[in-house]
Amino acid sequence: MHNNTILQVRDKQFTVSYPEAQILEQVARVAAEINRDYEGQEPVFLAILNGSFIFAADLMREITLPCEISFVKMASYEGTSSTGVVREMIGLGVDITDRPVIIVEDIVDTGFTMAHMIDTLKRHNPKSIDICTLLLKPQKLQVKLDIRYCALEIPNQFILGYGLDYDGYGRNTRDIYTVVE
Ligand code: IMP
Ligand code: MG
Image: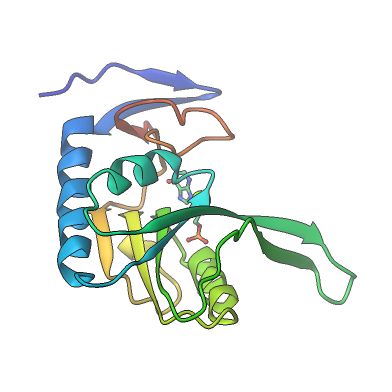
């Protein structure tokens, strides 16, 4: 059992909801599924910064396939008044044409970020695209997404830790915490 010590991050309080051991068990399970499904292929992992950096590090060390990893970021710009906010993917330093791509994300919430990511990647003509997310909030999903790999499905509450942040803070915990309402 884990304790229920309060973690204070900025103006909010959090308690442990997913201890590190449980997370790592599920990360290993997902990695085993990928190792099985991609046998004979050489996938390119594309991890979305910043939130997925710890998940990506743990996942990759369970992958036994020949593979590459690259880290990308979605940058937002204020466009012209007609286009509003423009989101552009930066950092794709690898040619994904005709290659199987696995997107590594920290959390799929509404799914808008992931849907946009997939649209952007399709323009580079990869062989295939699969989603691998650490966390999914099924109750909040608003777009149709085929999520092939998911480590943990969680309720509709704000969480942090293991790479995920609240206002930029709290990424540096081993366990995942849920906000105390
Ligand atoms: P979406 O486009 O609504 O799916 O948003 C996904 C992004 O929102 C994630 O990549 C996170 O950066 C952020 N996010 C959503 N829910 C949480 C949460 O509970 N904790 C921390 N970040 C979250
Ligand atoms: Mg994110």
